[in-house]
Length: 222
Image 1 (cartoon, one colour):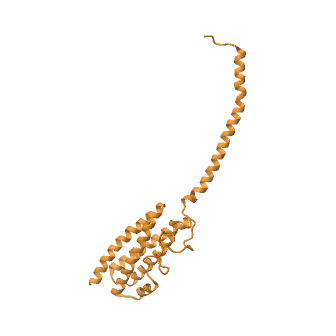
Image 2 (cartoon, one colour):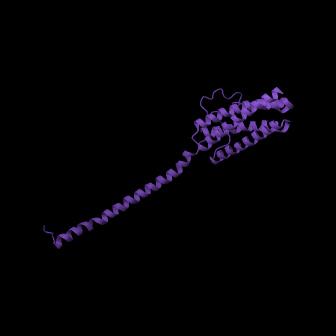
């Protein structure tokens, strides 16, 4: 086989290749630059959008649950402080103290998360609006398990065994309502913090209901 050593042919080939390089290089850099610009713009857009996608909104299940449960918990703290101050039964005093501290701490979590999400701690929505099929759950403006104003007034006036029975009975109903709300939040929420807190509420309040039942039997049997 004969290999061509024609210098003219070689020169023409080199000139052809070299002549195309600047144009191709320019087009290549333009394409790269455009891709980088588009990528940067997309990155900025994603950076702005993702936090909003990940942060619960004002009408979300999470915001509704935290607001409603904060109100629900506040009443439990109020009732527990009454029992803690007035009861002469060490077991009632201990339980009331534990419930007050636990639920006050959980209110702190819930209010802090709402602040972190730049959401108001209150809403113009009706209570329980975040929970599907909640019609009938709110009676006279009260969420499930909450005591009425008359029941609270009676509790404040009660003393001795009557105080203890009233407190335990009201708190048992209060816990049942709170568990119902927390279980729905666990089911509906996609936020890990909220589902963790709701699960903690369910577990602790179920345990306290068992304790309350034992205490009621003991008091009523004495």
